[in-house]
Length: 71
Image (cartoon, rainbow, N blue to C red; front, top):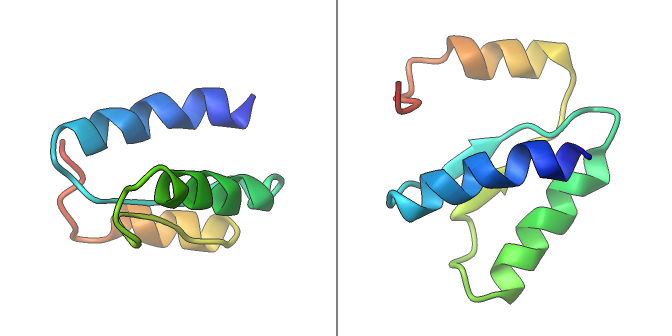
């Protein structure tokens, strides 16, 4: 279920030519590793999709960062 919610957004960002930094739920940390590894095995460049692990504090820091999030 978490992958179903995340994968389309990541796919849209990649199709638009963007790299992706995302934080999977702290309740499903292996999802991030698995998705990142699957993309690399499919031929995407290493580091194009980066899953960062952490709790609510990390999520807040990502949302509040000055990075362009495509909005």
